[in-house]
Image (cartoon, rainbow, N blue to C red):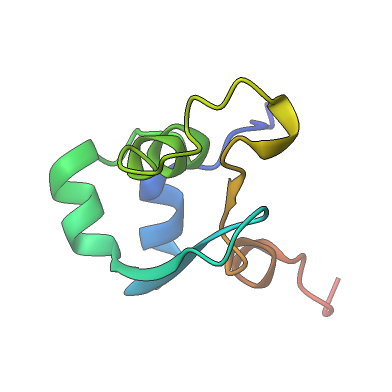
Length: 87
């Protein structure tokens, strides 16, 4: 059965040592160690949960304007999980 959630364990299995997290609404960005994230959140942690946990210090995290709230994403995920062209 296919899952619709990518976990940190999935990212590690794809060989990623570092991942980039960006905000879609501001210029905040960072590269983080997958090993560190695994130690802090565990292999079963959903990437969406991890990304939202990482925006804890952002002043826009709890903005009253939905359009201004943090919008974290990982630009590395499409590359890591792109279906093989050797189909």
